Amino acid sequence: MTEVFIAIGSNLSDPLGQARRAVATLTRLPESVLMEASSFYSSRPMGPADQPDYVNAVARLNTRLTPLALLDQLQKIELEQGRVRKDERWGPRTLDLDLLLYGNQTIAHERLTVPHYGMKDRAFVLHPLAEIAPTLILPCGTPIAQLIARCPPNDLVIIAPSADEQETL
Image (tube, rainbow, N blue to C red; front, side):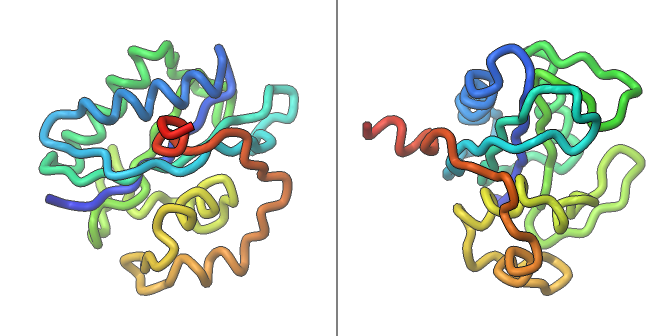
């Protein structure tokens, strides 16, 4: 099985509920096992400022799915949770699931770029990722700790415990 990391983001239609449902749905992916998910974070939108704040998290899975098969499954989950794809970049959405890392692979496909092209500069990705994989080293050889040191949390705030912690409360 291959270890993968998936970013979760939502800022419409009960964002925290959307993010929690996404984590729950990831537990049912074929040929995959959800290993853990980070806490849920609140962050300001990256794009237009006239939209609600986001809820973000990162999940770690082990999977036998190929990268494109996994991407198809993630897009199916987005659609099932009301995602409507528009041409607006960084606009509001019910759910966004991004494949951040697929093992140590570097993938440049018309449908998929791994590592995710913007992950190194986004606190709302790096901090939840570091929470669940503090010793992670990216395929390029960069430790997550080095990226965290260059990317302060800014307005990022933990608003809810991880799904694992929630079950024990």
